[in-house]
Image (cartoon, rainbow, N blue to C red; front, side, top):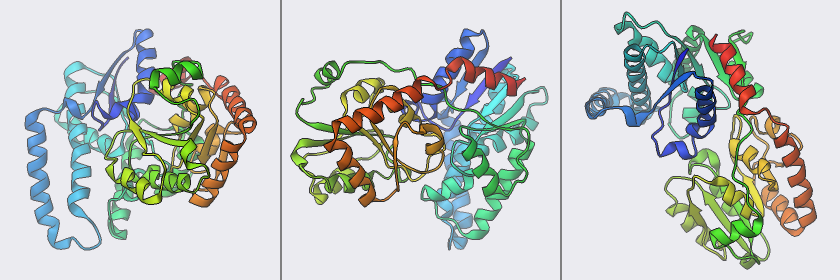
Length: 388
């Protein structure tokens, strides 16, 4: 067995994106002497990127007269970027004789399926992971790509056809898989569709004192930690608004770990009256920050799994999450769940910050749930089953 994993991410995205959940799986397969290669945008050559940009300009010009209820320039960029990765995957798989190609995006899979026709000796099974809570078409729309109803329906049909041709379809939770089927009007759920959880995270652990010393954090300040790429779906503005409603502002510090443009969030914090500037950062050692913080908060509008939530539980940190998507399935009783709106969020945060014993009780429940979570060996077994 020789596997090619394909995503549209860059190497920089892998710190908080799919690469973070895929890395332990790749390592486990390699321990089993199974070859796993990983292709991402950084593997596209200069010529491939140049042709992608030229084609994007051409198609954007052709569709510009119809630019009414659909933002064609952005949508065309989204589609071409992923089709280009599918083309690259077909070339790599043919050259290196991969037996399995795992596309972490249905449009990448559609591109791989199409371009495979130009490699007659390529004989690889392929499948898709749907990482969102719901079909990928709806996720693109929710992430800010404006589309009219006709375009949405066309893309959903294309996505459904792609998944029907795949050897396997995977989602990270049962509820996410069911939501994909609902969004694409697929009933019943095919037997080739499976849910496979992300594995129990492996983190570096520190005492609170040691973690704070390394980070230079103050002992007399309560630190609230949010994690994730800075994108609309993470709803960091709502987290900032909720923090602005908290009492004793001078004793509270908000820290956001995630890549992206954060100047607007910093400006919002000042506008909302936060007593302290928001701290932003990125790291390869998320355990250090989790062990140093007092409260982890996720304000996502949607999550198919929520790996950072499970990481916070595994670190023994009190966890507060919006009750969205697959989050309740993953956290169970190991986190406090709240409606995704600022007033409810602020109320729950204030209660937890005011009550150290309550924080500790929630943290212990979360830790027990994380310790009982499937490890990477069990998760790799599940993937081997679908590949075989």
